[in-house]
Length: 359
Image (cartoon, rainbow, N blue to C red; front, side, top):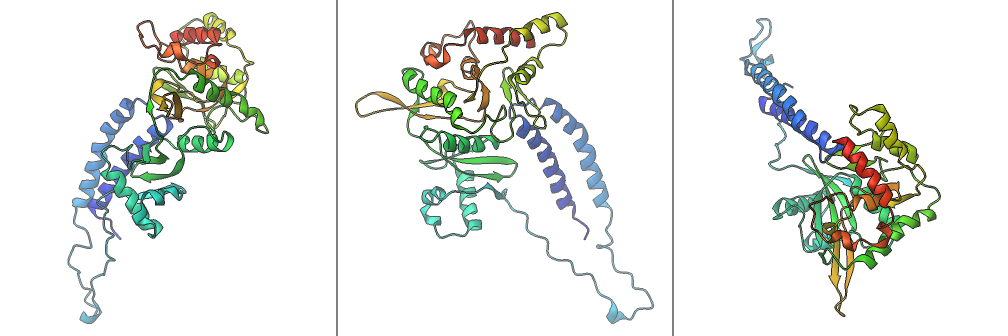
């Protein structure tokens, strides 16, 4: 069956969307300028070809020319099957199982089939004032798939830590959306050292309970992410197994115009023998929720944004907690970091030298 111009145009546009989505899936902070320039150059050509091809009369639209040897009653116009309706809104596909708490959040849908329930979720997301707020107890965040896997990993191996509960993952159009429980509390920048120190200490020591240390990086794809002015990622097909390899990955961002001797000296400053620990990788005040108790004391009620988490050298959280600190920063966040993150001054100083060499 010959496709209509509308169907081919939809297919072409979906192909363009997939190319952009693929770049963002690999690196959510990627600079899209090169990709968009390429698409800007090729898209008009492809669009014109599609339009020109389908502007020619189709054999299905021409009057049937009857061979003289056929009787009239043997002639018939081909009956085409009805074209499926084009959905006015993007469909919602389930990527990972949706847990039962989602049904409790939408009690009116408790008896609906799975397909009808996904329609309820889609409508809830599309009608939300902001994508992150679906109900008072439910968040829906557009993220890469790693954060869902990381939250499940934390809940399995570090039970009891105050992290959002992962209710499932869906795809709505080109976007991956994670359903998470909404934690109580609001963010704050101080008076959290004690609670935060306990949480970080547990993350950094409890990996000894596991049968063996995993590969470096994220828990699902074993990708290392290093975010500075941009995010660099390690190759998923060649996972990093040792700190020596991890340090080589850090050095891969060095400006190659620098002398070989200077690069060799920088590499010699990096230790290859730190313990490997599970790290959050993005600790800052906006990712820490606190709540006031009945006695007036403040305690941590949640740690958010686990998309940069994984297995890294023991100093990684201390380094990334100071990722944005510079000479003009007047925040007092740095004065309230827990003791666990205060013992890696040399590693942080060496990293600043490496980061300066990346510019």
